[in-house]
Length: 241
Image 1: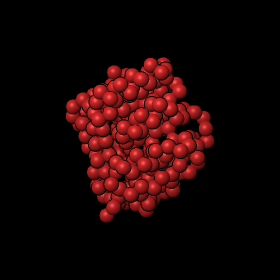
Image 2: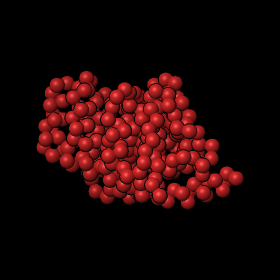
Image 3: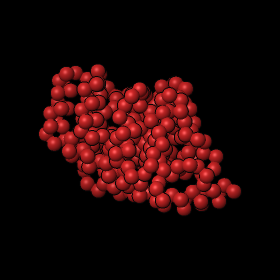
Image 4: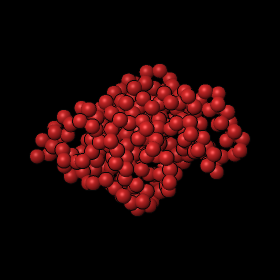
């Protein structure tokens, strides 16, 4: 049976978010533009919910912004976590997981952009990396405290890069980006200097763009995890009966 993933698109305006995710997953996807107030169906009964898992995208917003759509998404995500739905949070989605479930996210003094070295800490079914690898970063906020019950999966020289809490995993980097997306997000960023922008392009040209594609293994691990979720859905429904 083809898996179904709800994509919570937190990006602002027209972006390649959905195209990037569709390219990397084999599951069917349904996009919900949460930045425009469109939420997935409520999770009243996990066994009857229409999707197998959730991917939360990156965003130009900050998770600590007091806006209706972010507050609504946080409330929905807490319900999804209580229902043990599998969730993959990417960049902003990683930060939202932490913020919604009791962690802490703060702004950074310097924008982090470009290929970055990531160091795995533990092996985990949702994080298929045993050795250091390169991933593409673009963010100006970071998780500094994990939620209760969460444990870190990877770090970089600037902090937490991945964590897991129950059936949810967050990754600070962008495993869905191809080279075109890396260049697009670099060129449209007005918060960096021309020198920084040129340095990112140089790093991509020097092999960083190709090396960063190794991070897409996150999606295969997540879809593999979803294969066992129908059993989890049935068990969760029985527990709630």
